[in-house]
Length: 120
Image (cartoon, rainbow, N blue to C red; front, top):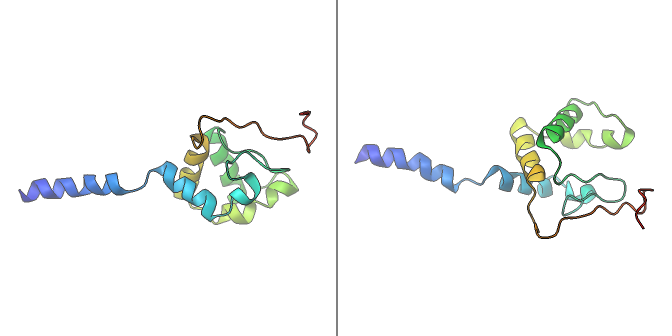
């Protein structure tokens, strides 16, 4: 009986822990990502959309920024934010962004009317 209980406890702990998606969602808001990239990660003004991007791309960009490598002045603004992220946090937040399914009935279309994107 003791062996059964000891084998069930770790499984229950895994079931109780939040998913990488949920952890990433919490991080996205706790770290203030929504301030520039928007509540729905659709981007705002000059800041790019992050939702639905390939996870590998997002990981690559965040790790470059974490190592203080920004391609543009705008990207360099991200360096302090990225430097505060661990590998596990990068994995979680990129899972959230790449698998984004909040309001999944409404796919966003970034408003680029103020950035010369050609939308009317």
